Length: 181
Length: 364
Ligand code: HEM
Ligand code: HEM
Ligand code: HEM
Image 1 (cartoon, rainbow over the protein chains, first blue to last red):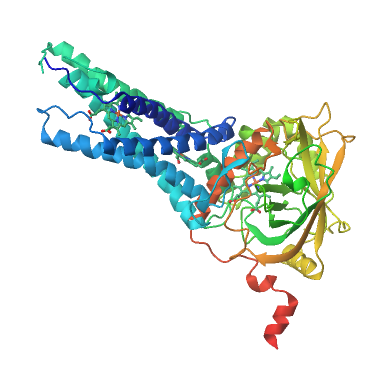
Image 2: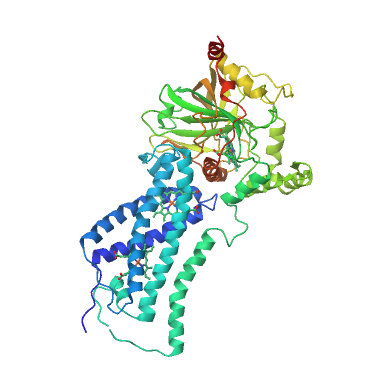
């Protein structure tokens, strides 16, 4: 049997590192936005640099992805599933980049200083001060975060469906270097 | 690719495997968001309690809704520079945008001398991060933590029959929070000044000053008026009399306050704003605030921002006072809500804050 191709080691490291970071961010975000202490400030302080790190990694990952070819999906996968995989992956990339940008943009529009590390390293504003825009982006940050979470759940279900039900090469392509079934 | 077949029970198990991980994550998400913990004090819950206690909303701040914008400058004395390396404690002529307000959540409330008055400041050194602080005139905060705050706002809920808080609830709050009695008594006994200009505004919460060498010093501060203090006669004189007086005072002459830092003594509670600090604590005169212009909130420079007490420059950090985090969270939520709403006109209109000269200039 031919060894099934896998994602490159770099792609896999980025995928799993970012999976952990993004899931943590979703939980930190929803937790802090529904709490008023005693860890509220600490979490907000962590949320900003972690979000910016995700933005940087996502841009690197996207650049890398556009220059390298990932392993193909199994030939016998129905066309709609292939399409769903493709569309959902594009959406995941879009949200990984949009969400931190919206977070950064909303604090800019709200006229907040945006500390990245401690309170001396600040991010520059990326939008002019405009309270209406702040309010809209704050709302958008919630909606996009919930969308990302829903998408991640579907994505994990699909990965497990490949691994446990279809038992094809898809899950291994992200977990193993080389696979032969 | 090999198709492996398993029996029906094997495949049921595998489907379970597919469902369990996402279901567990979804459940964890619901927990993190507070949906499974009805007793958690959340930002939404606080906003709901403020609303039920009569906060007006509609584009206005959820608390301290009636106010005016002011601008001026801050000149450091240098005396606090040994305790904090914040630029603000060394520089001169630091631009300031501020806001005076009444603590109530109703933007058209009638001025009453007993209502909490506030001063909020945004100090913006040109070469260093800004500092925001929001201060009130009572000398101590009769709330210790988030639960106290939530219980208190809930006790202020308006009775639809009377339009006032139910006295029984208010009494019950006092009875179930005996640890706040001393602070409430102290505030009730305070001497109320005649207006905004001769009032003292307190940080109430504690912060830590951080010196160049990293030493941390717990402080509270107050803005102490340089205008002589005259006690209020206890009577209101018209819907907007406090603001009209403030506007007339600023138009007449710049108003000044000294920023007095009180350094925590060995027995002072840093993590509990309901505890008064010792009388003999060391105080430091950190500098002088001078306010020389006043504007309506409509299009004024203090409207499109929130005076989040945790917007701090290097050299000042939050203490473990739990109310600070609660305020930071609540101010952000209030700011997000009001900024998305259509706002009515302010009680203190641009016409009311015009200088006498520009008014007479227009008439002639
Ligand atoms: C992948 C990156 C990010 C994810 C997954 C994420 C996720 C979230 C989530 C789930 C919430 C709670 C929303 C709600 O319940 O209303 C939230 C709130 C928030 N996020 Fe993010 N976020 C990200 C990046 C950022 C960045 C880069 C910033 C700022 C620089 C930021 C600033 C905020 C702020 C200020 C809040 C509101 C906190 C509050 O209401 O108390 N986020 N985020
Ligand atoms: C926050 C969490 C996650 C995010 C944002 C995420 C994102 C992505 C993205 C964008 C891709 C497409 C890669 C590409 O074509 O460049 C991908 C592929 C993949 N992910 Fe995830 N992922 C997450 C979590 C997981 C988890 C928990 C699993 C496993 C249970 C998983 C399994 C896979 C697999 C098997 C692929 C390969 C799909 C294929 O062959 O096309 N992912 N992921
Ligand atoms: C204990 C719980 C408290 C809660 C829930 C609370 C809530 C709020 C809210 C929602 C706002 C409106 C924010 C905005 O929309 O920009 C506000 C404003 C304000 N609060 Fe508080 N607050 C609390 C305690 C305090 C304390 C202890 C002080 C004073 C030391 C204080 C001083 C102020 C001032 C001065 C403003 C007005 C700021 C301005 O003029 O824009 N608050 N508060």
